[in-house]
Length: 259
Length: 224
View (cartoon, rainbow over the protein chains, first blue to last red):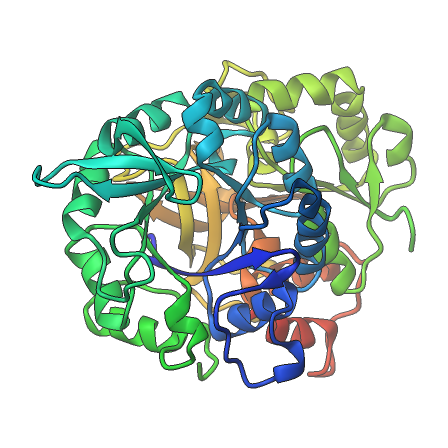
């Protein structure tokens, strides 16, 4: 039986994790491979690095982070943020990433998805979509790019369908309205996306407590849940999220450690 | 021990994870990009990423298909991972590819699955005992990423099965040929245990006698 995944997301800027991290070992705070290793030890089913560096020269730093992580972490690693070409994707994969998420570049050039899927296999290609509810039109969402700053006019559900047809093997769907609010996932958005495609959908944006994760999977029908801040604050752990999921009858991977 | 285990590099994809996992466990994997790199290799690891057609084309073009078949005929161990398992069989409905043909049977699309590709953690259900499963609980989760599965002609090669829509073989063994459909190098402590058992079975590592083995240390690192 396929288990549902719980995925911590580490936002990386210029080589450091930037969201308010409060792990116990202060000397390691902010070092991406160290935090990834700690998440893996707590039972993370996958690690996502999202590179939010503004400068292109940070790319080398990111590859170094991926390489150092791959030496210590033996769960899958996904990298997103700023990948614009198939060659850039190749570099990230060769550094040790298992999947690469593309967002703005795919909206600009949808054929990128096909090229990458052909070259590396669609299982490596994640379409990352930031969606925002269209005011006054319930059940409609618009794709926004460049970190949620630029509206595109694209219908999010149509874009997700098209991206899956073009070669994306997984959808990372973030509700921009909910991102950072910890007010719960946008469940209608999730359900619409899950109904539109056959590939797995990862829910992102809005996780505030384990109950939100349960809702995203049970009501939103997501295959996986991704969150950043709730794990970093240290109030909720990956273990406590998995406890809540298991209590709701959702199959999850238990690692045997008290997490 | 250099040269005794080689990871085949046939183009795109992530070789780093499998090499790191083998290194952590005490092996010293080399990288094989051509037939000469397989001389005197005891264990050949074919990792997997991408599609069957392009993968076989690259293996053929590099002279690696014949070299791998020759090495296996001469007594080498062959370990296929993910697409690498599928390459062990005869043909694939993906790209209509002709594969290495070391195990009998075709590779076919997963049917009746709720979602494809099959991405994520799923369970290894043990159908017959095998030393590769030492210390690995029945139903242990492993990380899968694929849309095709092998249909072995001989059911006796199947060691574990996994269910996603329908049931398919997730670990196959015959003689010195081993195939993992999941990625043991991405499957936490149980995955590292499978790889460690592989190294023991192939004679590259001694069986563990002490709890503080690299695998035990790795289990902590891997979240096990």
